[in-house]
Length: 333
Image 1 (cartoon, rainbow, N blue to C red):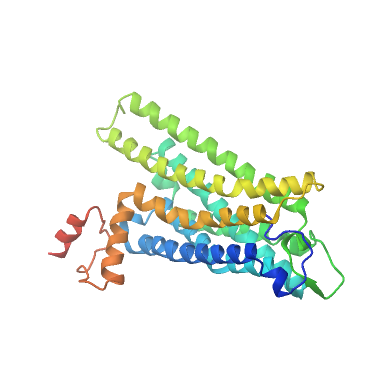
Image 2: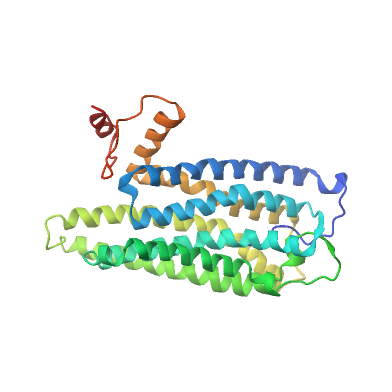
């Protein structure tokens, strides 16, 4: 989680704290928070509702959506609070800043789990169902969130800018050390996972291309299988690309602040970087229905049945899979 406030020493008065830049920033953050929460709730809802989504990849996508919901509900409000530099107890301020890092890390590790799952799916298609048992899925999800807590809360155990005063003007860079953000959070737990994910998707596309160029010799439906996997891999690689584009600018700013402290990054640029990183959370719910047809169908079902309160489809069996609105209509008869 990059710096969430500028290191400028600001006293808490209306003329300075609520300047035009701050008002624009807070207003934009409120919009992002609303879109992040409202956009990702249907993702989790769709995974729960549609039996076709009860698989490893979709569970990891739901985990990513939960992290994005947390960005809207917790991270953005905390970032706004920290940007106002209010006076609160030091360790409380430190905990709030650490909490922002936790949910960012959960997003990264959920993306890594998705990439590993896609690689296993195309590399070991026959053994995949044996490998991806329900117990292992929940174990992987638990590991992702446990590591996120460990990485995010590390400053609470001493790697911070300790202050002796009981109360502290809360600012991200005033409590979180930049060597932690650069070397530990960015290099070790962001850049390395991103590199691994890129390598995995390159391997996925190479395997699929090889199989398709060979005419998917073997089973009759192998060509269809790899064609579907190719489309799904493209969609998930796009999610990864959007994450990298959204977060790298602010991570780079952190590196500049650490390696070249003499450079003063303007406050509007820092706010823009923070907004861009938070704006990644509402992006994913737009990608899923556009690239994954079953998501679009399930979204429409949720909208029609639960939002618009129209006629609800008749009881769905556990194996029910949504494909098109026509299929839904047939199941209603």
